[in-house]
Length: 487
Image (cartoon, rainbow, N blue to C red; front, side, top):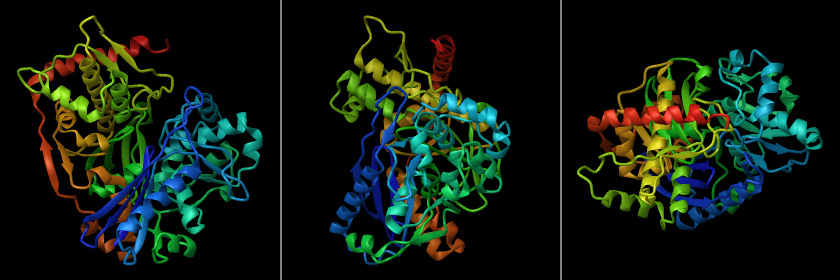
């Protein structure tokens, strides 16, 4: 058996994977996000550890874990976790959707004009390097005390084993990695005032970084098993869905929204705010578009419209009388930029907008507009990916938002491509982490078997009946952003 631990934004999920690749059990412990100022998004690293411990104890209470052979880690990317010489957190971790470092991005671009050549990516506030420049400028005493800079999942690794390590896919989102060399760039570290000694060692996702400490192993009722490097949440999710060969494509519908496609070698298009990262598997790369608010927009509008739950809102939408379940009726346009936006705008100051309200507008109109707006944003991202490479003829979907068949059908219609929902889609990153743990123990020869595509539960074919409607409304959507930009 193998364990996969995924540190998400809204919670920590752990899964137990059988030798035959089936998920035996899972446990989740919730997390909350602090937003003390506009554009800020933070979490206390200690809360990550407490949630992980809670989930692991719950799993151990229900299952015998003595047969576990290895652990893999996955987690939210880009978070700046800063430790002092005593390995204590110096401040709350600044998360992937923290937008305060906009000016630091401009500073870093001026200091290091070759950043795109080295990293293959635009300088964005969400990346880790600009966050460190912000700390250097605004919290200089904290900056001077930094002994180690870790990504979120790698803080868990240190708590579990005492090792300072990361993997290529997660390190790709820092702007410190030389993307073709898959190693830290001294030039990029110098540009932010850091040294190699302050960084964790970089491994491939299926390599072993250390061993679970005796104290933690005893507490979790585990043997002292090896820990695999793992992957950033999207790369690990792709491994979980068997998205490992060129052109294979996945959509992650979680707090954020991601189009992930395996590339034929390293390729980049930073002008479209497209990410070009290393995959969690050796000698493999991928391109990735990111919207900062996806399912989080749905949670927000459900609270706004006072539905009791997301499920209730979807049920009400499905029951609304109309000739066809997916017949367009909503005249409201929504821009889903509640936390700014990455692809394709790279605009941390972008704002969410409802346009087209009238006395006739009902709560369900707002809910439907949000679903459409997020879908249009994901289509922008898919177009960005297609600007540099071919994608597969169908897209695998993972994440909490993928549980809604209504939304999956809407996405198929808007993106004009079939959507496949597969077993394990709700635990994609933790499943991928467990698979990377299996690869670490069994070796690369088991890749095709361990990382096979899970069984397909349902396919949602694109219904092009209303293609003209979606094309017209998407043009309104894109025009609206350009008209309000900068206000």
